[in-house]
Image (cartoon, rainbow, N blue to C red; front, top):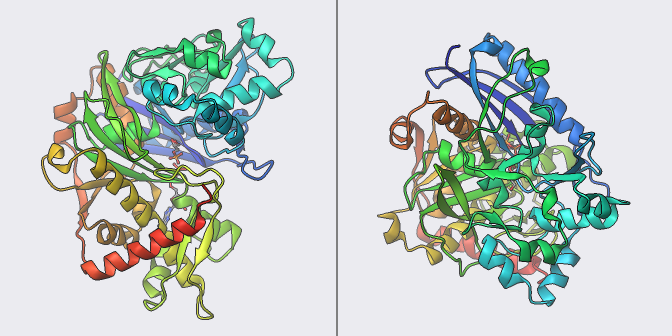
Length: 498
Ligand SMILES: Nc1ncnc2c1ncn2[C@@H]1O[C@H](COP(=O)(O)OP(=O)(O)O)[C@@H](O)[C@H]1O
Ligand SMILES: O=P(O)(O)OC[C@H](O)CO
């Protein structure tokens, strides 16, 4: 056996598998998009079979691209879109309903009802989250309520709940292992991140039987081995983390005060707060950054639902562009005299507003507004939203705690756009560091698996190998920055409904 590690990154719009060589460089990749289903306004579903099929197919493609045999893979690390909720039959492995995706807003009313009953403080104190449809708990409750017979079967111990990691582990192990890791559990709204256990009071409030829940393990742990029938021989699954947490470790943000932001479909900024469970006064989430050797490292997180998805909307919805990477040149060519703002609340607004009923809007258009201004507005929206998050973080976590100025480590599909990264530095008025390895999420999952396998270095050794591709320095006058931010905040205020 040689020391390759296979990372599976099951994301919102595509599944990726990446083989990392013993030198920790990318040896081969496989990637597949899969269909998104929008059965009603505000609803978003995935077919669980698509998540599984694309996983198997991309693993095979990555192995072929890397020209490695299965017996050269020492371990698998899994990372995944978080909160997306699946419920399946333990005997047959058949899902009782499609996967309800994290972006889905169908449980907004249930969240409102629970808030009106005064339940939110109990959820926040234990889980670090808010009562928002984003998280898994109300999605599980919805399935139990709306799928014929589901509640009785769940109570009889016949049904399993899982986030996408659990669904993949279940299938990879041939239905032998029902497990998750602490970071994914932390997104369910029923896991107490202080005690590290499912919480009976919260389960009762949502009517979720404990028997449905997976076993919760550290991020680097033994999650079982793949069924030999799948890839020809068993491969141990040694690492699991939600994609934003995997990106946090992939960016080597191991020190309190270190901050990363990932720009994929959505944007997620995660600030390591060490051993401290920091309660936000600015409606950020408190969550688990990672749990290693039984020790929990906490984080503050700002979650924005639409980042690259706005670019996809320009491409697929408006058909203004053919390819995502056209937007940079268009933004650069946009009329500097026009202040056009897109508030991309297609599925409500996430942190720090948490307004599930807000819907997207464009402000400031004139007769001269065209595709270039739309492209710039879509890219700038990501920068403004990051600024809102970083501001909120500064309110909760004094920058002195971080030992100096804010430096943002970035990754995800959108960071390919130099224009966006420069504008991000300009709007934040802080340096933005882009790493050499942009597959940071997969790298983080690989590190967890490689650490558990004893093949990859510990935190310090791994952090020392982090390499910067480029630093974007802020280069926009204070006045212009303030004017733009004021225009953005005015646009957000006009979009909010709560
Ligand atoms: N050069 C680019 N400029 C702007 N947006 C981009 C660019 N390249 C990719 N994107 C956007 O990044 C997203 C893909 O990022 P990725 O990290 O693969 O997402 P996910 O993991 O959420 O599926 C898409 O929404 C796409 O529109
Ligand atoms: O699939 P991504 O990269 O957009 O990430 C989704 C997040 O995990 C949702 O919380």
